[in-house]
Figure 1 (tube, one colour):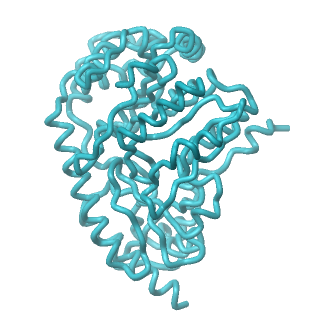
Figure 2: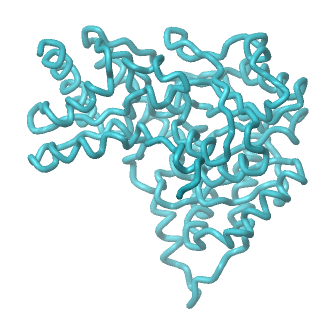
Figure 3: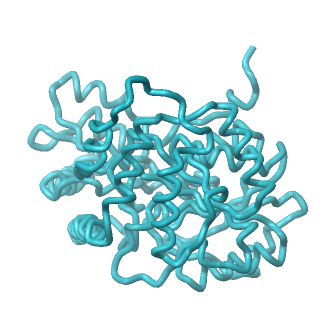
Amino acid sequence: MFSKNIQNLKTSPVRELIPYSKKSKDAGIDIIHLNIGQPDLETPKEFFEAIESFGEKTIAYSDSSGQKELIESIKKYYQKMNINYENDEILITAGGSEALLFTLMTLFNAGEEVLIPEPYYANYNSFFAMLGIKVVGIPTKFEDNFKLPSKEVIESLITEKTKAIMFSNPGNPTGAVYSRDELLMLNEISKEKNIFMISDEVYREFIYDGKDTVSCGTFIDNQERIIIIDSISKRFSTCGARVGTILNKNKDFMGYILKLCQSRLAISTLDMIGAEALYRCLDEKYYQSVNRKYMERRDFLFEGLKKIDGVVLNKPEGAFYCIIELPVEDATDFSKWLLGEFSYEGSTVMLAPAKGFYQREELGLNKVRISYALELDRLEKAIKTIELGLKKYNNR
């Protein structure tokens, strides 16, 4: 009755344990959500002030390509990084997810292949399944903090069906940040093999310890193949305001994307008004302040988790996630047990089993992804809950 592609969709590892949390919630137990990357910092007041000042009597459709004032503000944001896009090289989408979906719809036929370093953001799988895209995982190693393999290894995975290399930098779920040299290597592969680069850069502001990296938008020798995916969700703590961006200099590609934008008419006028104010009003001081807060949380989480017997992790270099290895055989079973059978001082923890972030699920069986987009007191309690939970789980 239903399409094969829709039946191939997998449950998100970020949300697959929600049914198991019901027992804890019904018992009045507080659940600390380490499973989802929902920023808890306040959305800047400029967003709300801009919407409150909306003076029209009717909320009309906006232009399908996006509000012109917003496009101008995004253009100026990129110019501060010495990256220059014209207005018709920027299209506004309903969040970064729509930007990715439209990009994949435009580039791929069913059966064609995308190269992607694994582990990778699990929601990509929904898009791949819907469109019949074959995923070819680029192997990375947990013990090497998920750095890219050599150029030769990546090139060995390319076939006549390969259409693009796709990645997020900084990385979700790994917290890894690709160096300038790693990105230059991918750029060379893209040019030499004539395949697209899809660079998901929504965590751009969350890079720690002075890591040497760049936006792929700086590679001016390959701009027609480089597609930048961006969003206001994490940058400004506005996940519920669905405003994303596609940036590219290939006129044919952007023309097809525009047709898709026109097919869904427009995105929220008020969300774009708020987003424009954020890009226009907030400066480097704001970005640095947010960066410091997340780096403090990163350090706190890392120091706490590494003291737990059997827990292994790398220090995240960016975003607000990390993959941790647990002293258990099945991290999914442990995560379910935490929700259904264990609490500490009235609280338990929801984790995201890492197997769902891997193409080869066996590589993530004893690992989980953790988000540290929480206040320090919540992280402290979560760390203690994991520590005590592991002891009890392994001594059952």
